[in-house]
Length: 152
Image (tube, rainbow, N blue to C red; front, top):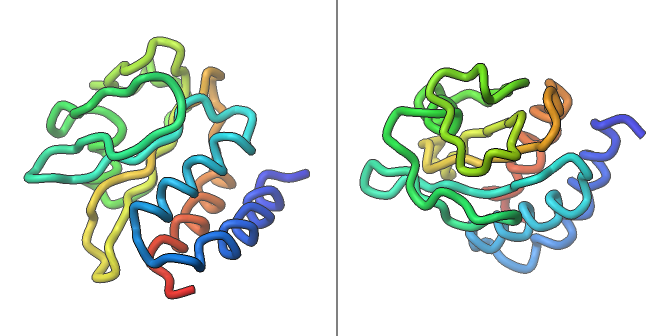
């Protein structure tokens, strides 16, 4: 099964699941749990939210996480500051990468927006394998994360 077909299947599953609440945190927690357990190469899956200018971990699946990410450093801040999804094939080659867990080898981070389009945080996924993420992951995750603000 192609990555996009799998993401589409998970999108449909989540759309059914998420209709019970419009609470953003509940929806994000459900999305991260489902993706973490359904996609084999996901090692760490979580959400960092902007709070008073800091990126703080909100929820996650996987080993213990960094609680607060150093300002304007690393992949999460790159996604938040540019407003664009960032795909990193090898985290060792990303300037300023923050190593919360040394087993992480590749990463994808999608900025999260509120209903007004303002960036409020990011959705972060790490893999133990190099080059796990590509444009299909970006498209699939962006589509799934659109469910966070949708009226279902």
